[in-house]
Length: 246
Image (cartoon, rainbow, N blue to C red; front, side, top):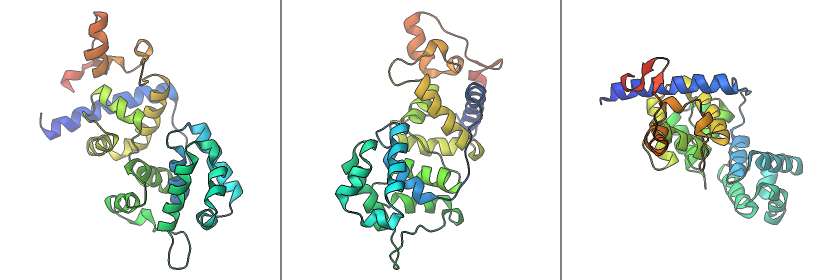
């Protein structure tokens, strides 16, 4: 399949899936703001824990300290205790202070260059050069903290993209690169939001709820793994158009 045809199929499939999920979950609501350091720290706190716990830890952090310079210079045990409710507090406290030190300018202020004025690749390279910051964290800082187009790929987005057949990748970083190549930028925010919710509620890692899945007619995983075990196969159609002809 040519790259042009591959992109065309991916765009049709992702747009169909996106519309179905938006109908089910509603349009994502978010407020554009420029707070990339907040988003960096918030994403670090969100690693390996629930949204509820990470938000609780971020709120505790911002209540306890008056600014990022204060967080950077705080005793490590005090910072660790403050964010303990977010899980893995010792590891995250070390990482947060390392990032804040790396962002400290000559005047002793925590400072990040304006990501909105950079080329996207340069901004990602800058963010991923920070201690412990991977592509997902960098993408969150860009998209949610700077309103710069980016594709955060967590385990949900990675799993769903592979199950649907949008990509064939082994790691989330590979999925992010493939999705940003295949999917138009104007869909990136919505795709992230609805895939995360879909992964949390329906397309779970273990025991996916295929019986109630709105994307089942176009799902490669259902067609190749689940359906043969059940001895039946749904017709894979997109609004009357066969997936094979996308």
